Length: 309
Image (cartoon, rainbow, N blue to C red; front, side):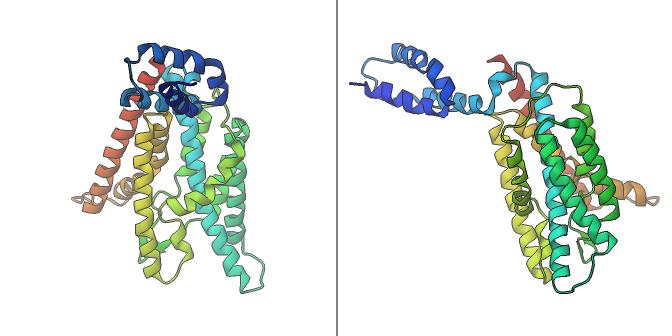
């Protein structure tokens, strides 16, 4: 009959991939049983946490990244995918808006409407190429998407307040990140095509994408506020997940890089003598600064810790 403690250890080991369990489960359980106190019937909290975290790290492939540089390269790859998904969500919102507007009026799309549709398709193909590790193709497609985006400028504003202040930045930042990865050996994402499913998910989570589809404006503002809360929860989850995979908080920081650029550039380009940043812009920059410091600190410490284990 299996010892109750041994059975509980084996249940905790289910957090590891099956191949890993088949190879090392008996060895791990044997070691833990030797270290157990006489009469012990339950794993300690420390043992349980270590087994679960170790299993999650194994599933995330942390054991395949042996240096902090490899972790940062993997984080940049994920960050590029996050940026492309964010850009895809914005383009999808505009494409849906075009389709809805054409539904009631049987007329051919205008050049700008074609540009919205083409941008959405291009970014979807780019996400698939980047996730599959075809970086040269992904870089070329990203440049094409930037050109298409130029012909389909974002017009999602309410009362002259820009809802998507960073909408133009994900694609250029993704292009820079992809170019930086051309000479790095970074494995392709697992289940690469599933990243396409993330685009409609980002349409719901990322703020200011979905409200462009709604009228009256009161609905859009309400939805916008709820999306901000969802985004905050998602970013906090990314920070916590750094305990499992150090790439995730770094990638989240890369995703948000474009958003504070808008108030900074607005101040630089429209700055008259004697003026300064508005209180809103200062608050935005301080918030983003704190977030970037947290993500990169957690990612850096996590990369060093996980590659030493």
